[in-house]
Length: 442
Image (tube, rainbow, N blue to C red; front, side, top):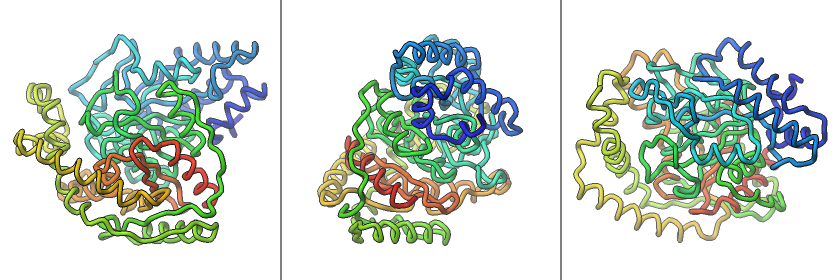
């Protein structure tokens, strides 16, 4: 049964459907693994064992009578602690929300539950989701699976750790500037950033609602496609052919390779070589307007985040981690006209970007240009924290600013991901292409 802890969610679902895996035994195996893990309290904020076992029992009954709700009916997953859970605290990693207990599930959790997924519990995260590092002295800092002295990436830090350490079959996180893809990359997982507006944000604690998205962290592209469908309440897509031959990719050279560390650079080059060997057509492109878009992040993100949270924050600022408080308060520096003008410029650049990449199946860049930083440096060096956080989110933020769907794949080099960026609402095509790339990289 211990092998279940490293299987994909889809393979677990197939095992349940074939009668080889009992959902209750599967759930208890995960709960036992969580209880026994020495780092469990740095990964899970709360474990919902009673709920999980009740849901697993219902899944077992459906499996026995041939009434399964989906391929993943009975599969246990974790949820980032910004998704509302009825009767269970949802605090988004912040003392500002201590003992906040919603009376209903977030829409995505309700959708997933209605299709048979089992909720193991809530995972730790960066405070109010406003950091790409995953360091959170207010609650807990999850470890990276490749280096327990390093951070796991944020803000879906515990989500990634729960899967990477074998304490969940998959996880649901959120991505505003890279918060699914960075921790997925640093923990050798698949992570999907969906298009803003595609998956419901009802019952999700917001950061910057015009950028906030919901997405899975998991062990395969197939899992990502299934979890996308179940969280948005739609029918799973047909993945179709996974042949990479003839697929056309563009490597975006603008910004994404500036000051990149050796390991992610080498891992990217190796991944590209393997895609070419498998028959992919890959070209370099530049898109200079990206250079104009990146500086607009400061206005677009902080103005919205501070606008949403100002009253709560200023009523109790001492409750926050200082670095996160400082980031929010940067929103004071931008006026309403600044914000409107920045959005007008971004909308113009987005339209130009979609035209520039229209001939390609996906755009390729390294997911993160650096390896996971050591926790002790982040704890003690303010300037390093700030620079590392900005660098960590730089590449992923390109996808958010351009408003596209994006997915990160493991490269085989620890903590180095390959990011594929698609088009707005182009998740289905992107996932088919990513599945082909995943097969070529394997």
